[in-house]
Length: 256
Ligand code: NAD
Image 1 (tube, rainbow, N blue to C red):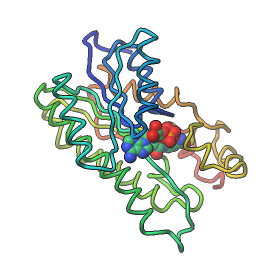
Image 2: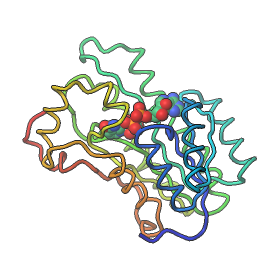
Image 3: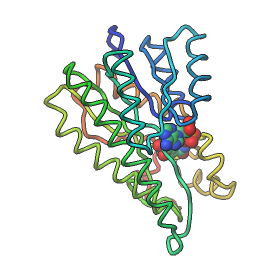
């Protein structure tokens, strides 16, 4: 894959664990300056230490994407310390499952706040820095749950991820003239701390059966799609939501 030899400054929200952590590792391996931004600062700092020990350039940023003032402060810090933000990967996200008829409003609002408003505000803050350089890459981690219903209980999660996909399209249209692309990756289920808590053994078995490749994805398989979208090879790709799902969306009739 054609990755520029130029060093980029890349900020990954939710970079301490799961998909975000793998994205951080892959970006660091390419020589980029990686900012591991997470609510869990200790875990972000540990991740940054691990990447630095492996020869990468990484540091941790304290960031709760659910708090607009924290986003402003984090990107001010990025501008002060690095003068730029070339790549933004919005991986921070939360999910809880409740039956539709009892779905708690407070959880709906909290999920929309982190998954949608957080993605919007981080992208806005990063794009303002990217505009100054005339180049940028934004990748939002959406979900297949934003493209079809996935079992029961995902009222807030599915709605938020559908909104992230719509937001990605809007950003792509308005940022293209500045040399910035905005794309989403829509993973199927992936083994991460999130799904270890959320997916029961029964749900896991049903979900796997509904996937033509008959298994969950890995963080590495999702990170590969992200790495393509931030590469030079993807310079003419913008506004898409790329499923990485073992064929789940292609196969509507297998249940779940
Ligand atoms: P995870 O829970 O394993 O890791 C998420 C990371 O985000 C954690 O480090 C957590 O501390 C951080 N985070 C949570 N809330 C935050 C906040 N308010 N501010 C900053 N950081 C915050 O999750 P994951 O499974 O790696 O998921 C990453 C992204 O991929 C999410 O957006 C998720 O919705 C999406 N996704 C995951 C799956 C899956 O099956 N795991 C499938 C589709 C999409």
